Length: 135
Image (cartoon, rainbow, N blue to C red; front, side):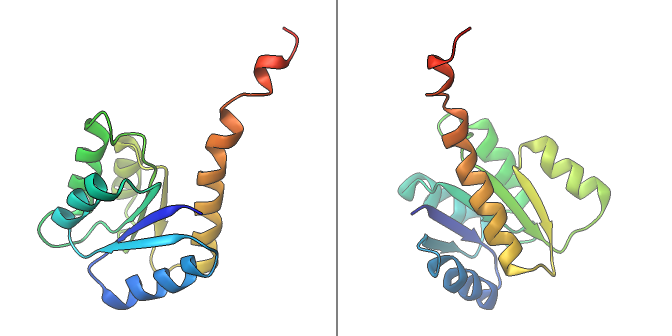
């Protein structure tokens, strides 16, 4: 079970994702603006963040920039989930350190699968088997 923070100013989307991710045994936290995201990240240490770009107080790009420049927070994977579809938005988010980018409207099951893939990746990279392989 992973702790996932959903950051979006749309309460219906937060409720949908809370239900969808809760159904696959994730603990879901939610925030409606960028300032709240930063406080929740420090207080609750999520395993992954689903982040909208267009939020009040602090937009998602600024939240991502701050997360990726703070040493103890930079390793938290972030999936951008936003209506922004321009090439410069997608590329910019990935350059800032987003693990993935998904444009709205989206397929909820696709987001669940992307989360599963991202959260599964660290287990495969830890290399317990690599240390035992011959050289």
